[in-house]
Length: 106
Image 1 (cartoon, rainbow, N blue to C red):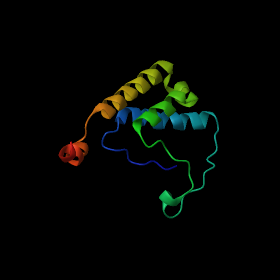
Image 2: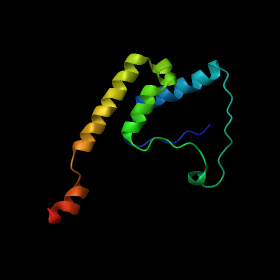
Image 3: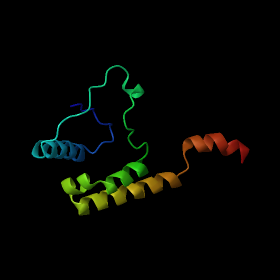
């Protein structure tokens, strides 16, 4: 089982809870690890891709039956809605890159 170190912005409590809940779910349901270890450059592997932005990740979590089973509907709905709000705030902001790039042409 591979566990990667989370980013500095990770919610450590949620990450630990998810890791423990997923492991317990696998043990209780006698799930087998079917994926082969990745050798070489993992970025070149033909593995399913994770969502590449917060909005897509929140949508995927909201659709996850497993997340709802492990954490409950109330938590999942609240967490997903708060991440979508955060995404909308991010999308509404003007970034420093945009200011630098477009200031001279406006």
